[in-house]
Length: 391
Image 1: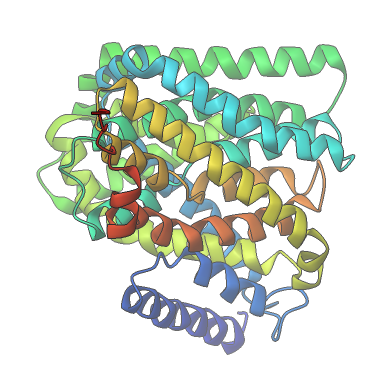
Image 2: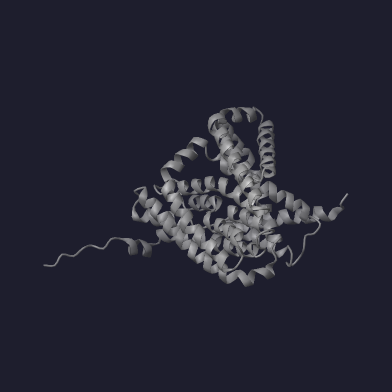
């Protein structure tokens, strides 16, 4: 028996998350920055340290990552992923180049080494699907013409993460060059094999977990997800990628019902995940990296705007829709924190504070920047000026 203290701390954390979520909703913001700030306040170097419940929070945060990624995978079928990959590959490639390079360059300039630079490249590359979906829903843009272009970028980023995360995990594991090559090769082959199973035998996987009872369906999907995530982690593929691939393999009505059942659990454990990342980051370490984080945020918010603008232009969207697509893609969130969590204990401890500050800046700025194209002054600014012909 651990006594009452862990229960008291866990209850206080969950109740605090509820209050923070309501506060964010009141101001039309994503709750992610408030969860991170809450973790900073009650972690190492914060106001109160939650020693007694840290083990529970650590395990819950791992489950949170798994649920975030399986829910992301449930949104797409394997055929949709491959179709999006073929159609939007040029835009996805441009997205990777424009947004990953600034992070990699900063990592090298700070002297953190190539592996840390690779981790920082991923942190600046991937937009937050969750925050962006909330922004589009709040602004009533889900049916807009530019929305498919935005979703195509997000889908390609998610699929790219299925290969990026195993490579990063293998490199972070260290070892000799031969060992790293073998580990990366095994990870990539495993991902390709699981994608093959998802595309060819997705219906079989869906049938395996399908059930008439909600309880059986929930246990089946959750059990399979956690099992595959654990096996993937054992193969140095990353538990997050394993969960993402399970989500892709489940399709049809099974995926629809599973999404409804898992959504509350995802929100709960994802909130704990962000809080735990904040807890493991010492607030004292943030001021020294605040200026680099701010500079990196400014540069990569601009590159995301360019990415979205060009992707929407390629899709034949008008000028206003192009700007909407660009500004909407600005926030980083889930994947950035996942990558930082993988790298912080191995590559460079400074990545944690830098990633926290960086995500806070982009998530706070994102909802405000997304509203810019709807402002009257901006519409006047981009409106074509009439050409006057000399008399």
